[in-house]
Amino acid sequence: MSEFSDIVYELTDGVATIALNRPQALNALTNQALTELAAALNLSDADPSCRVLILTGRGRGFCAGQDLKEHQAHGGATDIGEHVARYYNPLVLKLYHFPKPTIAMVNGVAAGAGMSLALACDFRIASQAARFSQAFVKIGLVPDSGSSYFLPRLVGVARALEMAMLGDVMDAATALQWGLVHRLVEAEMLEKETMNWARRLAEGPPLALSMIKESIHRGIDHNLSESLEWEKGLQSAAARTYDHQEGVQAFLNKRAPEFRGQ
Ligand code: LHQ
Image 1 (cartoon, rainbow, N blue to C red):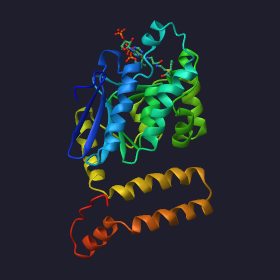
Image 2 (cartoon, rainbow, N blue to C red):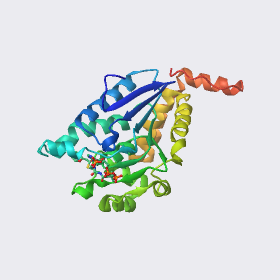
Image 3 (cartoon, rainbow, N blue to C red):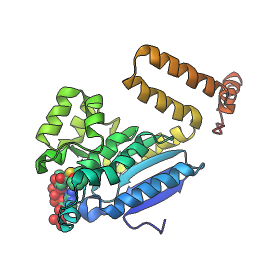
């Protein structure tokens, strides 16, 4: 859409794609890009015709994290903690709690806060060109934008510490082996494979998908009794939807369901 310069926002067949669009800097994040990213997330959240969100980058990078040149140009004077709190933390919370499925289509390097954004998505589909780096330590910083939360949950404490303390650039095959990404595909197949996933999710029951995300997120932070109680409440709500009736009727009549998000 034309109102954006540092990202490209597209919506096709219920699938919204936000592409970071500063390829010359491997899509490093300027204040402008961060502001546009937040606006695009609000746009797709508010649009009922959007059922799935894909986050990706144009060019050979996914996202190289904070644009260090812009930060230096501003004298590096702003308190980085305040900068993170103002721009990054709301984005990460928005992505994590996004009420529709989110897919990071990792086309290239994801470093620093760029890797955090990929981790905040529900799914990561990577091309052979994808690379991951907890680059923070290389510049004397610590994981931010949710990496300290997501990384140990995805790969375990030992591997999270290795990535965060060494900051090495990890190749796509290792990322798959460590469980950082869901699928690894040839670069030329990345868009097709990601769209296949997105379309399958877009055909799912939207309210149930949103509640599934909520319950799995809660499950990791709550004990069994609390999780059982939470599941019960969500199941009651899911059972009251049109989509539940439709799913049962479709099963009984041996046809594909047509979910409406009601
Ligand atoms: C970049 C960047 C970049 C600007 C590549 N900025 N131009 C939050 C708040 C405030 C401050 C600090 O931090 C944070 C959180 C963070 O995100 S901290 C982590 C910030 N990111 C990094 O430290 C990563 C820095 N980049 C790299 O280490 C490498 O570029 C990686 C490993 C990502 C890719 O390496 P290569 O594939 O060899 O590419 P390259 O280094 O040649 O980069 C290509 C161009 O992109 C180059 O520009 P140039 O004009 O020289 O061709 C880079 O300067 C530019 N670029 N990352 N973060």
